[in-house]
Image (cartoon, rainbow, N blue to C red; front, top):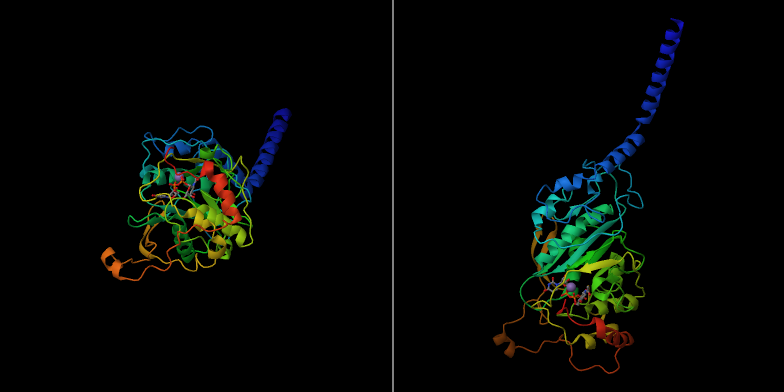
Length: 401
Ligand code: UD2
Ligand code: MN
């Protein structure tokens, strides 16, 4: 009897101690860690989200959707939310990029359930440390846009950013003007919210490593340092095309981007030169991290090579203060808050202004004053000359991708 009693006593003591330990462990911090580990074991959630008929690559290593299910769905925005960690626990490194044929926007939407109307996202359970606007110049590239949205949304969520995607759509058929659309994007995005960083992003460039964080540096950042189309190398030192990131202060300091590069080419170099003329320098992520895949395409109709680009580039030093954010003129045609992005359709006019007169009236009218001169400029600016040389490889329009 005595032995049974003492055994029972030990058993109760043991159970009591266990209860105390459990009570201590069940405090909030422990709960969070347990939930985190439970989520890791439920990795397959992401796969089930898309249902049976998902067309994207299956969730193997490098799948950009693999750990999205770890993000809590509780929308607990409030004053007492802690800041997100400095390095997001959801960042996973290299991303496998492919272009499945059957992907639809509806599927992209279904896979990004925490993205709010207008392509808006905030981490649900922590206060983001960065507010980033993505600005995409666009016309007739819906197919590319769909893939970019498919990859960019989870990419940015993994980085725990507070972000919104703006697509700036050039109205009409007149020659495309990438840099002017960026100026429109800058002004319209800043009008809506106090972004601390803007990413200017080609529609056809897909980031391949989520350690390439979409936050700004102390100087303008060129993020697309390594692209497949250039053999994952920087084509030349001053290259600033593809994807770049500037704070509002950087942007205003260099008077934004030029408005008068109509057609393909040159504007990216003009922007690069503006950075240094404004007393700043270009920063870049490492070659390992700043990797991008460009969706293969031909030169678009309505975006012919700009034959004036070298002459114009030679004059950036004289023109950058006279043309840019301080002179941009445009008319917003519509602003749509779509499920995956904010679409801003804009009339940016032509070289002859926002409302150029019809050809018949033109004959009678005085010649357009601000039309860039065609005469070759004596003594090309250093940068322009160097670029022209370095370009021989890079500076060809995308007609053979
Ligand atoms: C290169 C640069 C690009 C820019 C361009 C010269 C790369 C990866 N990118 O792009 O940053 O400097 O040369 O202008 O090297 N777009 C449309 N619809 C059109 C035409 C252009 O949406 O009809 C947009 C779209 O976002 C596209 C971007 O403009 O990604 C650049 O045009 P591109 O892709 O035809 O030129 P590409 O690849 O040579
Ligand atoms: Mn391209």
